[in-house]
Length: 268
Ligand SMILES: O=C(O)CCC(=O)C(=O)O
Image (cartoon, rainbow, N blue to C red; front, side):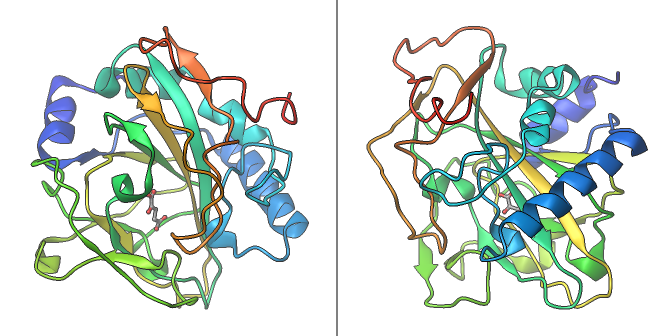
C-alpha cells in the first residue's frame, strides 16, 4: 500500500486533485469491467454515463439496478486510507456513479463543480475517480482546472436543455480559463481524487475505445447529508437524496444527525 506522501497531500490541497501511486490489480479491474457490463445490460434505458447509485442492487427512486461489487470497492480499506488522509478519520460513503462513455458516441461532461448539486452541509466531499478502462485524451479522460477549488466558491452554472451531454448544467463562462485545463490520463486500475469545489469535465468520446470510470463520493462525518431534497432531475438525470442509502465507512458520525437507515431496507 502506498499512502499519499506529504507532497501529494500538499498537491491535493493546492491543485484540488491528486493521482496516488496506489492502483487496483488487473484481476480486480477485470471483475469491475465484468460487473459494469452486466449493469449496462440490466439497465438498457439508462445512458451508461448516468449509472447513478451503481453500488446498490435495488432500483430505488433513482432507477438503476446496480451491483454490490462497487459497494465492496467503495469500502476497500486501502482507498479509505487515502481518503482519510485528505478528508479526516470519520468518513461517510454517500454516492457512487459510473461514467461510462461508449466508443464512438460517449457524451461530454460539461465543466462543472460537483458541490453545485449536493445536499452536504457544510459542503465537503472527496471523490475517488477509478479508471475501469484506460482513460486518455483520445477517449475523453477527466479534465480539471487546477486550483479552481481554492476559494471555496460555487460559481453560477448555466442550465441547458440538452440530452446530448451528461449534465445539463455548466459553469458560466468567465469564471475560469479553459486553456489551463489538465488532462488526467489514467491506466485502468489507477485513480484520481478530487475536491468538491474543483471545476472539471470531460470531452465526448469519438474514439473506438470505451472509457469507463467510477466516481466514489465520500464526505467527512463532520458534515450533514441533508435529506430534504427528494427526487430531482434538475442535473439532467434522476437523483433522490431523500432515499439514497449512505454508509459510515470509517470512525464516527460527528454530527450525530446523519441518517444511515433511509434507503437501506431494500439494499441489505
Ligand atoms: O467521468 C467524467 O468524465 C466526469 C466525472 C465527474 O464529473 C465527477 O466525478 O464528478
